[in-house]
Length: 96
Image (cartoon, rainbow, N blue to C red; front, side):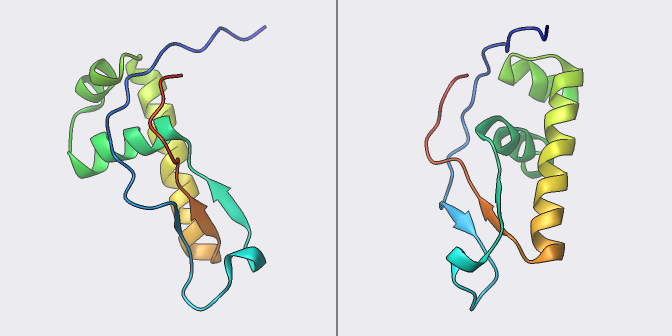
């Protein structure tokens, strides 16, 4: 049985709802959902250049969990870009 999810502090504002290839209607694209905690990890780790330890502390999670979220987010973004999929961003901030 998996452990219950720990409450995560999220602060990044999402600028739009989706990134997609230009000229292709979104209904024709495979959609990849980027979760709110993955978006936050990507923002803290890659945009704000925080260390994993500091970013994990800000989110209220372990460094290992932060690293897993960051790796998952990077994979989703890379997959969307390289395969021409739509990347769906979280619509509202939430604490899960």
